[in-house]
Amino acid sequence: MKGKNNIAIGFLTMGFFMAYGFLLIYLRDFAPGKTEWANSYSIGKHFETRLAHVHGNLFAFLNILIGYLLLQFNDKLQNVKAISWLALTGLLMPIGILTEVYLGLPPALVLIGAIAMTTSVIWLGVAFLKMKQIIA
Image (cartoon, rainbow, N blue to C red; front, side, top):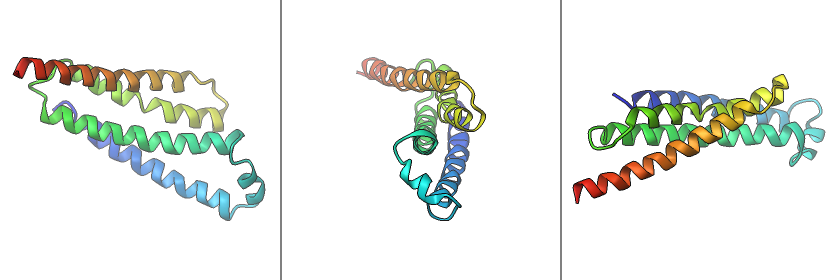
């Protein structure tokens, strides 16, 4: 059942980052200091938190899509388990952005996650190209 965890964790992650969007709306529209927050739209914590929100949802969606494709083509693709784990590891990227913003940690998780997700997407593309050659 390689791919099932990508779908489940993808939906859970998407739900988290969607809810996180409500926090960003609060900070922009209702929180004390909302004007300063809105004015820092393209710099600092405001920019970083928007990056986390967007990439969190994107990477969650990619996990849902990758998981679905891995389930559908599990017996026809190579390296399914590795692709699945790399896509899940990719979720470290938006989590890493949040740990930078809120905990002041270095961007190691961001880099690991970005490299893992990029690798999983490229590897899946190559796996589908090879599958086409096998079927043809």
